[in-house]
Length: 83
Image 1: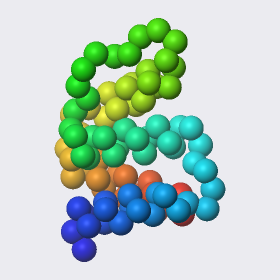
Image 2: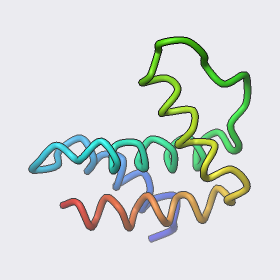
Image 3: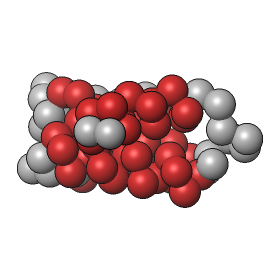
């Protein structure tokens, strides 16, 4: 199975996890997913009191420069560990 197929399967599996992941893992999932599907973070960092948007932006920014394939592999590994 190719990494793209594994990633697609992990994306589906993430919707059916037995337990809700911790906020840290949710941010990691978000960042790796965005890096795998869109590449490096773009746009301005959110400001103000939208702490959720700021946390998501910073999480995505933390994986900046990682290849899409590496992000896919890390996402698959994380989802498999959460199952």
